[in-house]
Amino acid sequence: MGRAAAEQAATALRKAIAERGHARIVAATAASQLEFLDALTKAPDIAWGRVEAFHLDEYIGLPITHPGSFRKMLLEQLVKKTGIIHYHLLDGDTSNPAAIARKVGKELTLAPIDIEFLGIGENGHIAFNDPPADFITEDPYIVVKLDEACRQQQVGEAWFADITQVPQHALSMSAQQVLKAREILAVVPDKRKAQAVKACFEGEISPWAPASILRKHPNATVYLDTSSASLLSPDLQRALADQSQVTITA
Image (cartoon, rainbow, N blue to C red; front, side):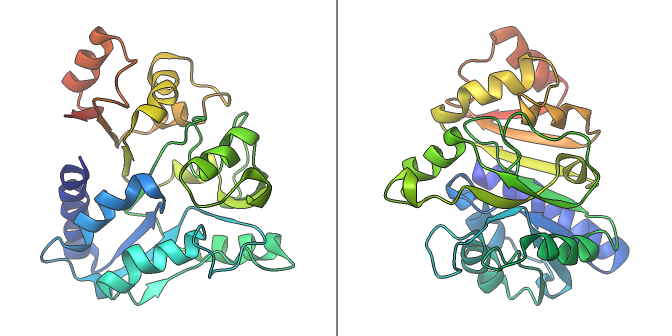
């Protein structure tokens, strides 16, 4: 699944660079993205020096040296492997996170994002937009309070020893900003995501299922494995595959 998603992402990057001389991306950095990003950084013929990178979210109050820091992951999983020169970090370890949101948000909105890499959380979040997500604000980045399910997921993925160590607030790209990318590619593996995937595709488009808002985007692809797709009805699996809205890989 990671290799298939990386092939699509690499094609989009090459196309953007060929057509516009550069590419602007947003990258998710989490355990679910490791195989995808590893394959993407090994893809041939991508002029990474012409790529400008942003990331989705970051904890507030967590130093960049912490294993769970998304800044640390972005640097290690993408920037250092590719030699990207132009990248923007959300410094959550600051006394004024709202100012950081405005600063990076201003850079983000200078030009369209060509392709955006996402995951979907166990509670259905995209970025750190936990339910009920704010589907209204147009601010590029917002300060959010993390719910218990989101924080417990981070413990389950072994980034933190227990929930008391997980920050309660974060900087997050807003849901409306997520939708402004020209193309969205979401990589969603694992049985733990199955209920969130079901709510995304079978329920209403609702702040209580934040990832459901992806259905409003005209050029979004969601890669699932058989585990994360396991709760979808067989008819829906076939219908989504026929419409090229979702790729399910064994």
